[in-house]
Length: 397
Image (cartoon, rainbow, N blue to C red; front, side):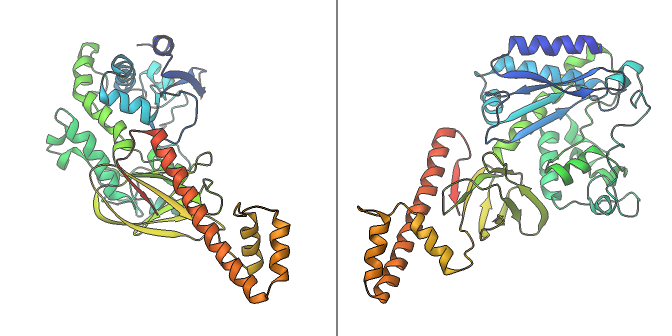
């Protein structure tokens, strides 16, 4: 397809599949070609407490296979939703974004770079010390060597999902299992996946899907069939593996946009601001020590065993209390009184012995904490029932 053909195909798709998709533009190329994205979801355009996944094709202008595969992928999902379980899971539990062509100018010129002759996968901002420590595409000494990132096991796990599902990728004689560390293959700098991992908590793979950069069009159906299962399984992996949950306040029961860290993995994942949901990709393992943090709250740690499936793991954090006055204020804010106004209750307490007053305050505080924790847990359980079909194992820490 030409660039105009591709734009028409995308518009036709969103008209045909408008109930599960929308189109939006993220900018334009040097020559003014719009960069269109298709979003596929059961609620397109709306933010939900779900993991997001993006596919980007045609980063290099002379590698057009990706743009064709991505349109075939979108149409397969539309044609098979909701009758196919995999299509249903992707639409209902993931927000999928597809940018078929990142380099339409290079495609028109049949060359690697864009209209300014820039290689788009070498042109992301230089990381300086961050690049030196980033363990995927670049190395510290700029030499070719295996340079693992903090999430090396998770990246290997994700890459293997694609390779094992492919027609013959895992049988590669050059790369064991059909996967490779980027720097072990050849180090590059200014790469998109390095930048996104550091600055956007985005776990990216670079997928080489064809030995021939510009194969004859009649080979596209075969290439699609070789990659179809891999492409679908990689999308679904963000919902079918790892840990997913929210962070709540024990004081109010409201979501907190905190952060989640894994002991031994020097990479923090932030929860979303709207729903305080997080989605942490991890390879299955016997033991992970997971910690949730939020400014103004006490951090909480729990140890989990992550099997092949996903795990729902919510955290309920207690606020940090600097003095007794703040604690008393929290007690009075609770809806724990039984008849009469708060002033009447406090008047009774002040007219009683001081010792009795303190005992009652402690009892009220304890009861309120129990009620608020219960409310937070009920909020989580209601959310889980409303979401449905999510991670099978639910844990509250």
